[in-house]
Length: 53
Image 1 (tube, rainbow, N blue to C red):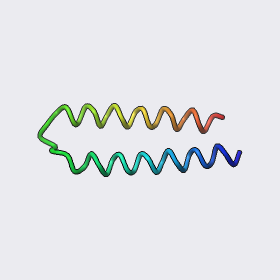
Image 2 (image 1 turned 30 degrees about the vertical axis):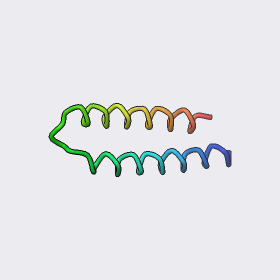
Image 3 (image 1 turned 90 degrees about the vertical axis):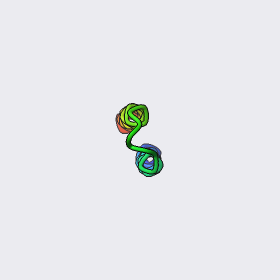
Image 4 (image 1 turned 30 degrees about the horizontal axis):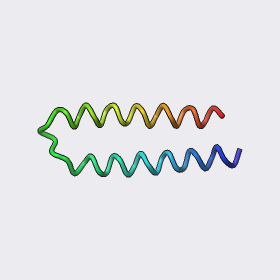
């Protein structure tokens, strides 16, 4: 259980760092928005897998 909690913490940390990095990118470029949306979905998916274990 401790490993799962640690995984969740790491996943949340990575998600925050990724969101912060993407915020610095030009919002006028739709490619960044698609990339960001896909990345958030991927992070959420990985986090859900870790929480199920």
